[in-house]
Image (cartoon, rainbow, N blue to C red; front, side, top):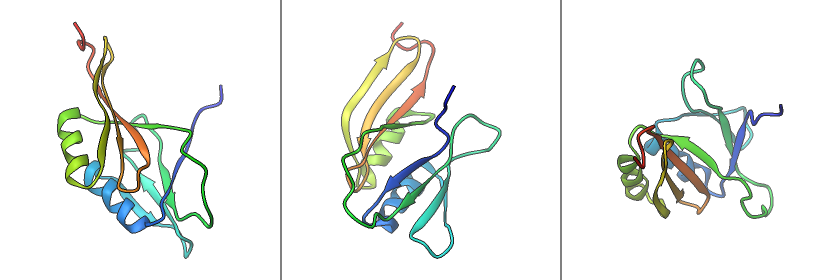
Length: 124
């Protein structure tokens, strides 16, 4: 099966967007070489998940067709951090029965992403 192995987030103001993801999710983000490209390490290599990158586009980008969802420990706390750091909640907390809770947000440049808190008892 073909799996997603890397994500990229285009940012017109990379420093501002990178600071948002560092502050909200605690990611380790480092510039790669002299290009306007930053690697994002999202967690321990021994845990499920993928790493990605941020880049400054050289021209206009088409609309966002993918939504990356980030696992969080507490969805309410994470949503507050998003708002406190300039992001917005665009789809309020939803219960996915026997799976957990999902929220859709936008970052400081309007890129959409999801946050998921796993909870097997959700909706029961």
